[in-house]
Image 1: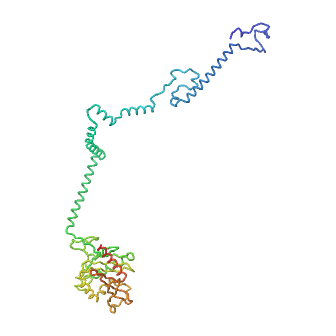
Image 2: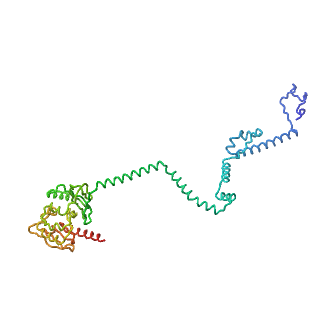
Image 3: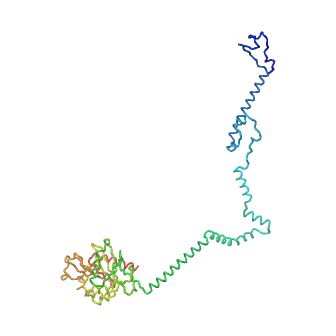
Amino acid sequence: MDETNNKIPNNENNNPSGKNGVFLNSKIEILPTEKDAEISETQKNENEENDLKKKELILNYKKKSATQRLQEKVTPEEQIQRPITKSDIIPIEKNTPEDKVKEWKEKEVKTLRTYRDDVANILKSQKTSLSKIVVSEKEKRPYRDNKIGEEGLSKKIPLGFMIIIIIVLFSLIAGFVGNYYINKKNNAGITEIIIPSFIFSDYQKELFLNNLNKKSIIEDIIAEIDLTSIPLGQIIQLFLTIEDSTGQFVVEKADGSKLLLTTEVFLNLLETKSLSPLKRSLRPDFVFGLHSALGNNPFLIFKVKSYENAFAGMLTWEKTMFDELSFLFQRRDSKIDRYKNDFQDLIISNKDVRVLLNNEGKIEFVYAFINRETLVVANNETTLKELFKRLLNADLERKD
C-alpha cells in the first residue's frame, strides 16, 4: 500500500484540536484499494490449500501401521507447520516376515530333489536304461531294509538295557531249572495218594486221626459231625488220614506225610465183628461223609470186589452191625428196641434194600447194593435217595 495514501494532511483546518496533528473525538474511514483485495484473496486461497493438506496428512497418518507411526518423527499437525524433507520419508521394508517365509519356500522348492529328477539325470549322464535302474533298486532293497531294521532296533533299545534283560532272564531260567531238580530229588520215592470220590461232593475236608484207638476215633468223628455246618441238601466228604511214619506217602489236599485210612483198617480200628471174607470182598478205598437233611446225617460208601461174598458177609454182620456202628448212625432222638426189631427187605427208588425200623416204623438204619460194585450205608431214606441219585449221575458221566 502506498505510504502517501495513508498520510493525513497536516493543516490547521483539519485539526480540530489545533495541537500537533492529534485528532480527538474523530473517526477516520480508510477505504480498501484494489491491491488490498488481491492480497486478501490470495491469503484465502492459501488457507484453503493448507486445510486440504492437513486433512490429507491426517488421513495418510491413520492409514499407516503402528510401526510406521512410531517411526514418524512428527505428527501430522507438525508437518503442516513445516515443509516435509527427505529425512521424514521412511522407506518401506521389503523383507517383512511374510516375504521371508515366501522367499524360504521358493528356495526350498528349488532345492527339492525327487527320485524322478535323479533318474532323469542318470539317464542323461550315463548310458543306461530305466529297466536296469529298476532291477538294481530291487537288488539293493533287501539289504537296505535289513540295515534300517537293525539300526532302528539298536536305537530303540540301548545295549546296556538289553544286557540287563538277558542276565535277568538267564537268572530266572536257572532258578526254575534248579528248583525243579531240587524238588525232584527231594520228592524221589514219595507217592501221592489220591482222595477217592465215587460221587460228587459239594465239599471235601480232611479228618486227621491222631490216636488210633476206638475211643479216640469215635470222639474225633462225633466232634467233627457236631462242628460241621453245610447248607441244606449238600454233601461234604470227610477223608480220614493217619500219620505216615515212613515219610514216603502224601495225601492229596493234606499237609505232611500221611496215609488215607483204608476199609480194612477202619473196620479193625472200630473193633467190628465183621467176618474176614467181607473185609476181603471190599476194596481199600471208601467214602465217609455227611448229608445235610434235618441235621448232619453220616453215610458210608464201599466199593465191592466180589458181590456174592460181600452180600453174604453183610447178612452175617446184621446181628451186630447196628450196635457196632450206632455211635456213628444212631440219631439222638432214636426210638428203637434192638432186641425186638430185626432187618427186613424194603423197596426204595426201585432198589432192594435192607432196613432196620424203629418203634414208629421209620428207617433207623439201612444198607443197599446200588449195583454189584457199590455198597451204601445210611440212617434215613432221604440221604439214601440222594446217594442213589448222585451215584447214578457219576456212573453216567464215567460212561460218557
